[in-house]
Every structure is written in C-alpha cells, then in structure tokens.
Image 1: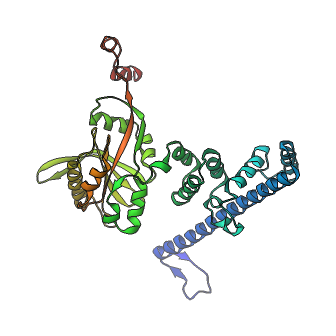
Image 2: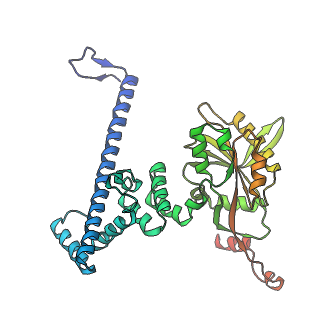
Image 3: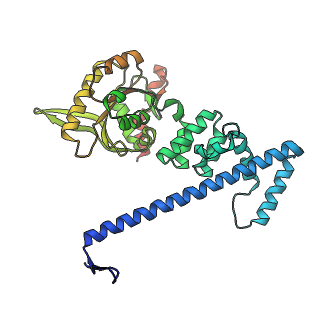
Length: 354
C-alpha cells in the first residue's frame, strides 16, 4: 500500500516499512509527552495537598483550631469548587496527616521535589502514610512504586506481605556473576523468606506436594514471586547425552530478560544442591537461551538454611543463583483415633469438585 505525504516535499511516496517506523517514532514521542504531562499534573496535585496540609497545621498551632473547623473548611471548599474532587472531610484530614508525616524529612522546602512521595499518585500515598510507621519504609515503598510501576492493589499486597523486610535478603552470588545493572535488579527480585501461606501441608510433606500446591495456586505464587515472572513450565524436560533431566519450575523474567530455574527442597539447605543447580543453568543457557537473553539465574528454595553454609557453597560457583527459605502453613497432627474417622484432603477436594 502506498501512502501519500505532503505535496511540497521532494518525495511524493514513502515505503510502507519506512512509514511504519515513522509512525512508531511519533507514537512513542506522543506517549512519552503524555506520561510526562500526567506526572507533572500529579506532582502539582501532591504539592497542593502538601501546602494545604501545612497551612492547616500552621493555623491549628497558632489559633488552636479544632476538628470542627476542618470539617467547615471541607464543606466550603466543596461548595466553591463543585467540579473538583479531593476536598472531602476525610481527604482534608489526610492532607494534614501527609504534611505531618514528611515535614521533617522535607526540610528545607527545596527538598520537597526530591521526595519520591511527590512522584506517585495520591491514592498510593494514602496507603503508604496510613499503613506504615517508619519513614524509611515509607520512602522505600514509594521508590519501589516508581521503579516497578506498582499499582495500588499490588502496593497493598507488598505491604501486607512485608516486602520491605524480605526484599533482597537472599544469599546470592549475583554481584560477582552478573553485570552491575542486571545484578542489582536480580538481587532486588529475589526475596527471603518467601511466604507461601496460601498452602497448608502436612508436617512431613514431599517436594511434589509443595510443587503441586504452588501450581494449583499459580496466581498467588506469581504474586509472591513478584512482577516480571512469566511461568514457562513444571518438571521441564531437558535431554542431555541421551539422559532425561527435569527442572522443577521454569520461569522467564521479563525485566531481567532471562530464564529463571527454581528448584524446590523440603529440607534444610545442603551444599550439593548448588552443584545440581549449576548443572541445570548450564543446560538452560545452551538449550533455552536465545539471542538477546541474559544468562539464566537459579533460585533454590529450601525449608531452612544456614547463611554461612549457603555463602560458602556459592563462593566458587560461576553460574548466578540465589538461596532462599520459604514458609508454609503446617497442618497440625491429629490423634490416631481421629485420623481414621476424618476424610483426607484428597477426599474433601474430590467431593468439592463433584
């Protein structure tokens, strides 16, 4: 198909592929400008709420205003700006709380724009300053929201599962085995411990039971792994030297642009687990890795681990991998006379699916 362009141009025709590239560039520029405009509007809105909060706090101290004055202010602002949301009674109180939360951090005033809380939506800010006590945590969650584009619902999930305490705590060799940019992201991607509280297993559960449970609740599993993980397969078959090998769980990480091999263990970490993972990563890089992919990374998930043992096990390993613990709900054991009279979990599930 031939597309015509401006008559005054020296050319009257343009190749479809050339036009497609031109259109793509224009769309990207427009989208970038739209994003910048949206961020600028949001930033100005947050600054406005900050200034209103500061004015309220200042007047309350000077003139000993009570709660009723704030309620009156909210009603009058809503009357004066009927088409603008954000001046409800509850939001006026949030503006006051927002200012009080970050007033000491943002002194002098010129530091305001450097705070990440001025770069995220107001709804995210409400979640952060209402749910968290530590300033360090609040700033951390705001930065993570910006860096990873967290939605408000994912932000709440992160806070509920205490991402702050678990993020980047795994024992890894990423810093030594990956380029700087990738190693930093990889370290931030791996948690310790992983919280699989959506699983209830018997005290002596087998690795296959753990794997089955994670696949059965794959959506919750992916949420706990974090953004960027794309599920490829379970018991992923690899054939080397006419022998069959199976990776417990295989993922592709969209931001790291690499395969992620996960091995599940129902025991305490043992150094020999590292050798097996090193073997799987070598195969993955040879058979699965495509042009443009980064080196595959491994994650060994164990019931418990000794940090010093894990660090020594990784010291001279050249493939990038991490070692983390995980937590599940353990089904309390019952007396033998009750066990025989109660249906098994499998029997209950079978009845529910009928």
